[in-house]
Image (tube, rainbow, N blue to C red; front, side, top):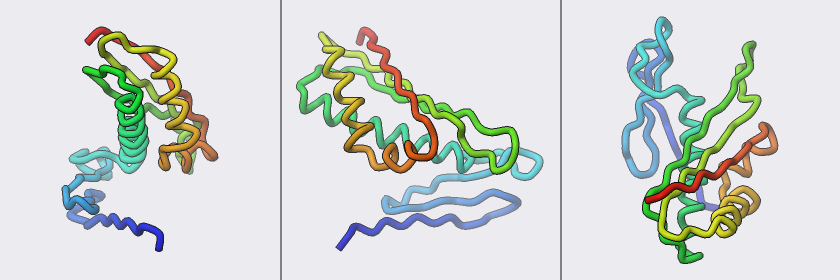
Length: 141
């Protein structure tokens, strides 16, 4: 049987909700004022965070398997939205900032490429609907 995941949100006030999923950590989700209080992240930011988290976990696990000595790692996802409704993303940019000792750019590039093409389910779900452009920045640890 396929794995079943569940997430839910509970309304608190105005457009503020509290989200919860499998690990039972609360995630505040809100809208900017005046419709909300700005006391949480927006649903579109949650989507970007999901992509950044999924791709980051995947790239990191691949780099460990490739025996890359990673010391710092971050992923920034930014999305450009349409001006009119439905305000969907028209493009998403992922920036992988990776620092380490003697990192091999070809292995880092391969890890990002495999993440996109094969291993990150969030990326796979989104890329058919919105262009996703990835860039890699190697830094000193």
